Length: 78
Image 1 (cartoon, rainbow, N blue to C red):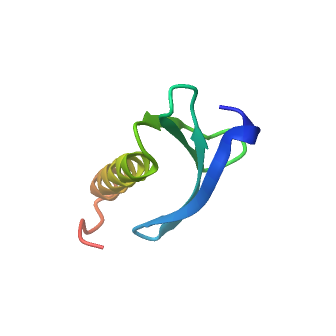
Image 2 (image 1 turned 135 degrees about the horizontal axis):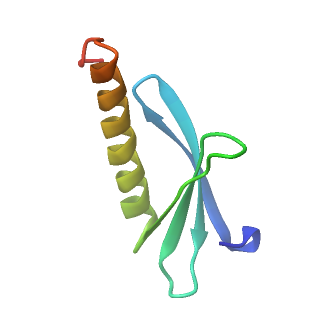
């Protein structure tokens, strides 16, 4: 994913967290969603479209937050 292929930047809100997602066009006309958690923590999701990439990121973050709350014994409903 090259910075010159950047087509959009979105902020995705999941629970109490807001994650910046950079969407770039791939060579095969699919997209990559780069999740900006921190300087050294930027997973990339490849998908056929920006909407599908964002939906995948949102689903993954919801699952992660659910697991963290469950492990900490916190209420699962936000």
